[in-house]
Amino acid sequence: MLLSVGVPMLSGGDEVGRTQQGNNNAYCQDNEISWTHWDLGADDREFLEFTRRLIKIWKEHPVLRRRKFFQGRRIRGAEVLDIAWLDPSGREMTDAMWNSPDVRCLGVRLNGDAIDEVNERGERITGETLVLLLNADESPLSFALPAARREERWEMLIDTADPWLPSRRLTAGERYLLQARSMAVLRLNARKEDLRRSADWGPMGVY
Image (cartoon, rainbow, N blue to C red; front, side, top):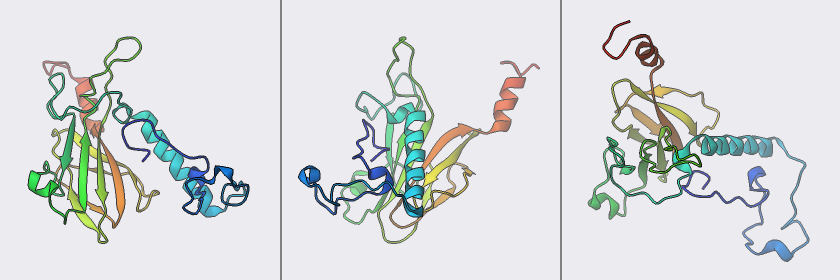
């Protein structure tokens, strides 16, 4: 839910795995149903760090903090749609897939160049493009990463199957193995060597 577009809602204690045992109206109970336990075990501390990482991703990427609805179209001359829903082949989902009861995996590409908003100074807001991959199936599934420019790579930010996996960079079309009932977040950015090359050479290719 933290990576849903909009204002994230956390109940106090969620960040350390606090539970109300399914009771959604526990405010009037002065017992363990409503208490927050501050003596954190190893699992609680690990979950707190996981939550911190998700909050950091949310704060660093304006595309997750949009104030306007998506249009499902190209914005301000952007090359791709502001939002695109993807099937495991990395292509846009068809109507048939949307209506299929068997679909358990999908991706959503959020274009950081098509936010179509300005900040308090009237400056256009832009950010990195993200892709969120979700697998609700009981089995792992291979997901082809969506198209990108030649100099760009998809960089893994977090994978809920193992939040402590080291980050890695993948090319468009490369397969990402999503574990059962997990979610992965990747961002699109240019390779460092291409960024250095563009900085060293002028617009006409003259050093």
